[in-house]
Image: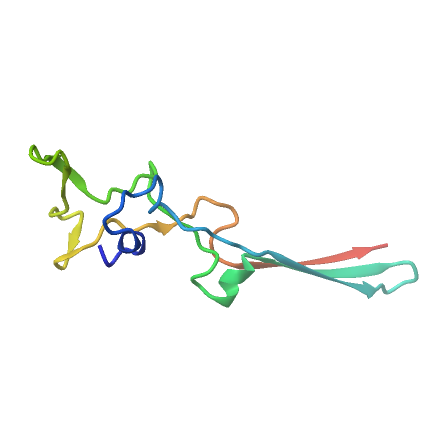
Length: 131
């Protein structure tokens, strides 16, 4: 439980719906434009740089959304029944899908690559000339 941030912070509590699903994600897109004089009178040019997911350019861990795989379900334990004396659920985390190297480790959430643009940063340069 200590290896999962959400579970570690909520020991002994009832897990909130979608509590361990995905943290808040912030992305920042930037655009810079510079007008330049044209070759002939009345003409002009423009150079433009568009940065998508600029925060990921600064730090590879920023601006990345992690999500459970399809169908967006992340199991944290299996139910092994109900204790007849207390009426509480009995959870089983002994299977290979929860144990790795002898430690509790539920399925990892991978970066969500379904969005366009992707979770990685990118730069687009545009040159424009009007006459």
